[in-house]
Image (cartoon, rainbow, N blue to C red; front, side, top):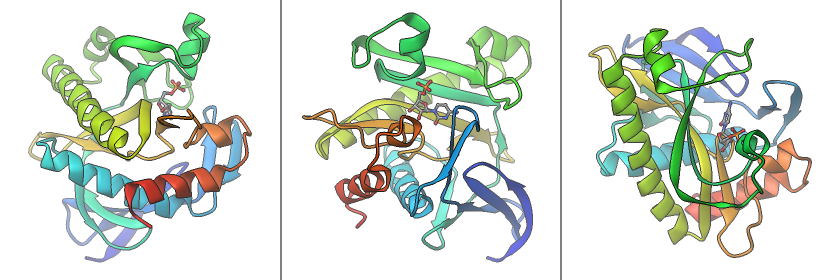
Length: 236
Ligand code: C5P
């Protein structure tokens, strides 16, 4: 499979077309941004961690019957994935209070929720990815009613599988963001990435943060946290 033209360059990755019209290649960068691009920096080695970890987790999810965009890992930073049309929603599942929900609802960080919750943001950098509900997604034409139902069901299943997997390696899955896409035949698949950039991971015993919050909040030890997650997942 060979790269042809570059289709897109985002904050954390580049996407290339290939000689196969149904496949694109994702190329993970070390560039890090937070707060909708206001804070910028580099996390050395992040591209490799996110590429490999995301691929590993997508394969676990496939084994549990969740369709994903994953096709083949090509190198430390590059992966072939199915070409999809991204549903313009950021889908966030929360198991414990952290980040924006603490600010929004005045909750203390770490509050354990009675049950997991789901929320949607409309993917739009200029608007700052505003929070919307499933009805907005349907009425604005971002997704059909059926797609919203499928996405909700898949997202909670991803949570069940990943929560159990991470607990087995001493990590608590606090919250995470997913993106979904539609393949040429109309199937909804899990797309984008699942990594320390898109999840909050806490050590199950000490509650030490092992994710991008170390960068967002200038806690230090950012690269070390990403490497620690790689070790726990058994990838180095
Ligand atoms: O910022 P907030 O608390 O809403 O983030 C919830 C989860 O979604 C976190 O795990 C964060 O890493 C992830 N997220 C993301 N990309 C965004 C917003 C949030 O990966 N644009």
